[in-house]
Length: 301
Image (cartoon, rainbow, N blue to C red; front, side, top):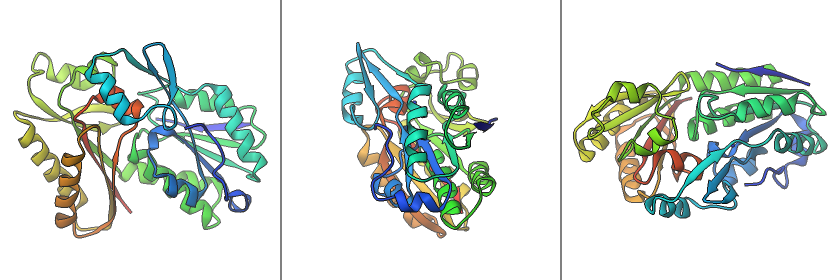
């Protein structure tokens, strides 16, 4: 039984959350949300893993391949592709969550423009033992993670399925994601660059700032050097954050110093900063952005 809302760590019910799940709607997401494990445990959120295919090996994101291994493979120009979870993986997750006591499930996933994950969840939800609402958030990384948290917090407070979905959709509508990449080659190879490819045309020597818009990657600005692009990223994030209460996530791949420095500067510049997360993206996003990625998600509360 399913309904869907729309514009790929082995999935398991987190230990210690059986009683929590019995009280409210259960929240499922996918491994590209990049939520800290302790946060998922605390809120009873379950993540279904996408798959990274490295050469002839199919590896689950979050348990079988690290960001470091992925970065090394990309630097050696090894073949790396990604794939969605199967409907059977979602079906098993929904079954486990239902057996843990959930009477309804809200399943929140990365943009359907990037992956067939949403479609797989919809297929599995049709025959799930409890009603499943599947939502295409149009987001990815902690932009998706913040949506899952909003839904979980609403459910924990006794909210209905509709209220949890509304909370996630509102968070998605208010959230902005920006990122810098050293090269557009990985995005071009994976077919994920969308409108940015046409906008940039032959000017691939520039250092682009990109953004998520309508579930797609689009060009925000073209900058001539990496240092200027990162400085501009900081400016854009600080401007978007304003003075209200916001959560921010800083993501990177094989660029911890860049991420740490950006986080420190944002702490000093954003007066309404509530939580700031700094993390390396997983293998699925990293496969399409390449080493050197620096991103920031701004999510008003």
